[in-house]
Image (cartoon, rainbow, N blue to C red; front, side, top):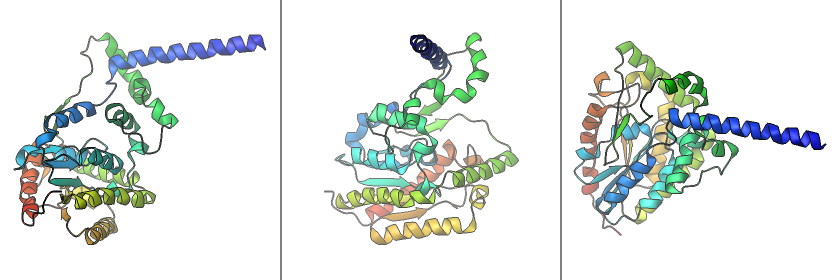
Length: 321
């Protein structure tokens, strides 16, 4: 028995040392965390004068350029961010004295999307940087996601030779501006590649959608709308422009079902403004960096349209509580 225990301890220690070695190598090859902390710190620096907050995931982060809005604004949308985190972040910043408007971005898959199921590596950052606990608790997968090796295990072997090429340390290739907007570096696609990527993204977004999550997501949206209504904040629910190939990649009844749910919200909260810009005219391939995200040029164009939409708030102003 003693010999077995000794061997077991030796095995466990060996595995631990191997894991620590792999973890150390991974931290030289890959980024260990996102730039969520930078985004939150930027907002902390300017929140005393911020009047408009934008929420959503990467499509909204790419689509809204606060510099094109007439009022001081901040884009708090982030990669893979679902409505659990939108709600948590709204709760954190809802009492900004200058806040007048909330822009909630919704995509066609938002109501049935759970970030902890598809982007656990980012869930750890929300707790590390904002002390927001994971929606489903600290699962084993959540704990493992603190490991840089675990998060990048699929590409570890193919990236390992880079250690011997004297390459620069890994860094974020996406420029995060002080207003929360982001300019991503990208390789332009041919027209056929752009169409194909739009179709792939539509298919992927349907695959990560779960109808069982709808009621939970809608309750989180309503929690935001309820507080906003009590505080007399103007709320814009908006969908960004999508390429035709992306829109056509969804079943015919998908959008109509989505619209019905937004209409239900509108009936319950009549003061909100629902803005469907998914098929907005005047946007073509040169406005997109890939199959479903606007590029910098497209974001400027779309944000100028959103700036006009903000007139809906000033047309019926309410006293700020």
